[in-house]
Image (cartoon, rainbow, N blue to C red; front, top):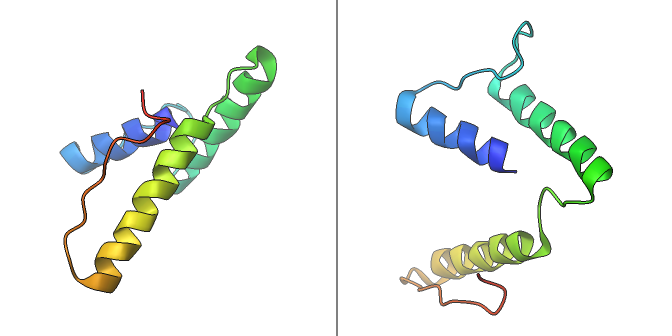
Length: 85
């Protein structure tokens, strides 16, 4: 997932992403999918997850806060959760 966020961050700063898969003409979505597949392969070999439970829990928590803010029209504030490092 870090590769996706890195590419997204680069896109936000520069207006374009660099294709780490030289020789392949890929769009941003295809680069993201390739990065996930590459990470999955690495995860199978090393046992290191590419997207930890803590990261997933944090993403879900933030998603719920966004939904709450939209529904209520009020500002919501995130607080540190038990899974946060």
